[in-house]
Amino acid sequence: MSTLTNNVTKLAADAGGNYAQVYNGFLFNLSARPRNGLVFQGGFSTGTTRTDYCDVRSVSPEYLVPAVPGTLPTQSPLNPWCNTSTGFVTRYSGLGSYTIPKVDVLFSGTFRSDQGAPLGALWTITNTTPQWQSIIQQMGRAPSNGVTNITVNVVEPGKLYGDRVNEFDIRLAKILRFGRTRTNVGFDLYNILNSSPILSYNQSFSPGIPAGSGALAWLAPTGVLQPRFWKFSVQVDF
Image 1 (tube, one colour):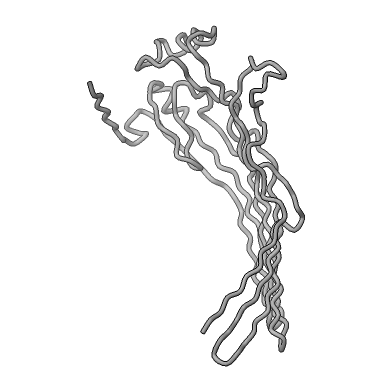
Image 2 (cartoon, rainbow, N blue to C red):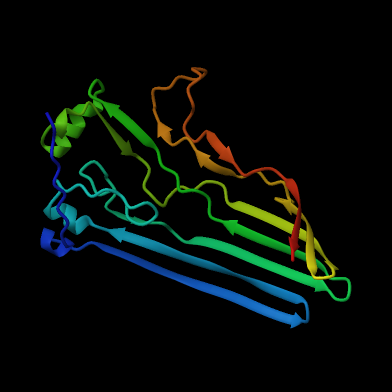
C-alpha cells in the first residue's frame, strides 16, 4: 500500500498571519595597492537575523514547514521557538600578496575568522518516556502517522555557538621562465598557527546518559580544523 503526499505552498498572509525574517548588519571591505607588486584586501561583516512566525503559529499551530538550511528554521508544533535571533554574527577576512620585483618571488597570506557553528540540544523523546504525555497534551492529540519518537531542540537557536574558527595560511612562490614556458614553483603552509577549533559537535542530547557509559556526550567534538600541513606544487605554462 502506497501513501501519497500532497505538499501545499501558500503565503503566510493566506494562512492567517505574517512570517518575518529581517537581517540588520554592516559590511566593510578595503582593497589597496600601495605600491607596485603589493596588494591588500580585507574587511569584516557583522549582523543579526531575526525570524518571527509566532503570528502564523497562533492562527495555524498545526502547520509543519521544513527548515531551509542556513536560512529558515523548522516551523512545527513541536518547535518551541517561533521568534528567534542569531545575535550578531561576525566574520573577518583578509589577504595580502607581494611580488618582489626582478626576482619574481611571490609572498602571500590569507586570514579568516568565522563564527563557530550554531549549537542545539536535540532531545529524542520516545513514547516510553513521561515527556511523551506532555507532548500529547501540548498538541491536543497524539503525533500523526503512528510515530513513536520525536526530536525536540531544547536550546533556543542563536543562543549557543561553538569555537570561533581562525585560520592563517601563507604561500611562497617563484616564477621561472625558460624560453616560451613559464613555471610557477610554490610552497604552501596551511593553518600556520596550528589552531584546533572544533568544527562540528555531537548535538544529540539525552539527560539519561550515565557517566562512563561510553555513549557520545552532548557537544563532544566530532570534527576539528585540519592541523598545520604544507604542500609543494609546480605549474608549467607553455
